[in-house]
Length: 223
Image (cartoon, rainbow, N blue to C red; front, top):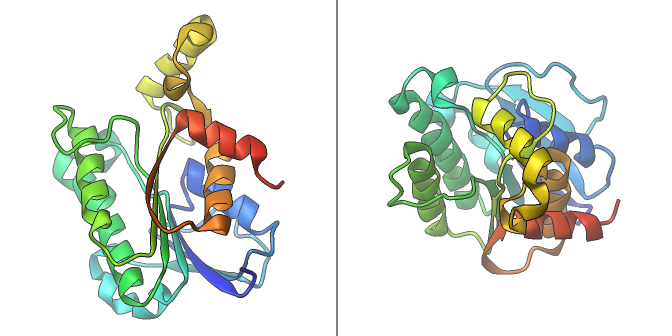
């Protein structure tokens, strides 16, 4: 797979940042395309990494970026940060879907997508419903492989605090032994390790990978 190329979406976020850190330590890809909405704080000194600050509202202007083999999508925000439900959906659904759609059109074979535990098109929770809508939409794209990662609470050092995740950390510390494995928090680095491990294998078809499987794959992944 060393001659392959990958597009990493969401590199300024927690999971995407961990993916980028791992990607530059490995020789899985000869080209690592990183489209971002705002500049990276620390751009890796690696000639394979191409960082492009783009306007996702004019995504069609950046067609050359989508000619890749794999897409790793970790893009996501919060309603509070986005400012409205409409803006949240624009980022989490539209930007992600349009990137995946264009990459599929250019021949990309594998989409690896982070959504969330509870993603469901019929959910009463808006956040989960958007994630479910995204999952449903990408299933219809012509990828050979679609791997959807549904982590529970994500652990790691964020730039911004998320109240639900902070509460989850407390509950996990107090009652972690009693929480079913698929609901337990999962480290951002483990998600990244699992995504790259699945990318290496690229089994055909559509798969859902939840927190317990994410941790298991990460444990068994090549360092």
